[in-house]
Amino acid sequence: MPANHNILPCTAGIGLRAPHYREVLDTLPELGWVEVHNENFFGGGAPLRTLLKVREHYPVSLHGVGMGLASSTPLDEAHLSALQQLCHTVQPALVSEHLCWNRAGDLVVNDLLPFPYTREALDHVVSRVQRVQEKLNRQLLVENLSSYLSFSHSEMSEGEFLAELVQRSGCGILFDVENLYVNVRNLGVDADEFIRTIPASAMKEYHLAGYSMRDGCLVDTHDHPVYPEVWELYESVLRQLGPRPTLIEWDSEIPALPVLMEEAAKARHRIEACHV
Image 1 (tube, rainbow, N blue to C red):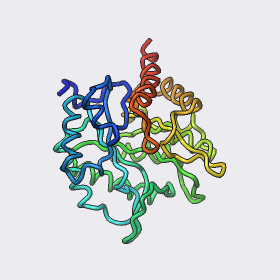
Image 2 (image 1 turned 90 degrees about the vertical axis):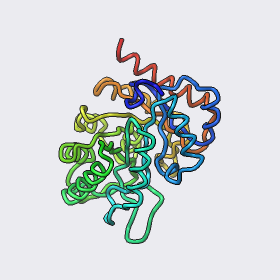
Image 3 (image 1 turned 180 degrees about the vertical axis):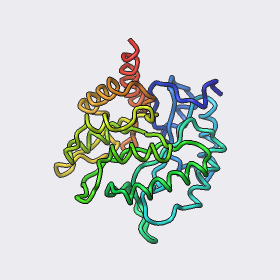
């Protein structure tokens, strides 16, 4: 196990998905670190055994898609307990979740849905983030969301919401640069204002991915290489906030491992340029 297995190195990693498990273990490519989706390992068995083998060679970050931090229904305690057990077993460097909702009553939606940024919502999310952190006995990173609509009754921007959430709960931020770009294009969000608003000290990780265009709207599909305009925004983020561990996400239409490695190399070169 690497000596710094509890810390993500400030370089580029990839989202490790099932099609690449065997190749990564057989070839042990030069990866800074890997990130996996929590829910794929809750059942234990072969997937978890594979992850533990990967963990012997690379730092691991756990990324959740199913908790629904902003849902109005009570936190799913079974889900939270499964995450607690996974953290105990894997000992990840970081754990993250999306700032979204996905439940209403008995209905569970397989999506990451936006919500209005109000004081009431802030109080609600703060209490839930604190509950998760207490259960896990570690800091949770919260990820900014890509969105296709905005709410007229929001009382603050997403950046302001995140800044207050950090201050009140002690959580960190996973800054998805591609999500910000999607919101710039879809909603007219001011990227520079967002970057100025969020606290740099709370920033622990960046995400990069490729989007799709559907009916004139950018959709956060994670099925393309990172586009030049997202690389440009990432370079601006690096100049303003400094380098952080950076992940290449690719969740559908998954390419060959060398393609992912090439994308990670592009991020790594930009990170290294910050130190020159």
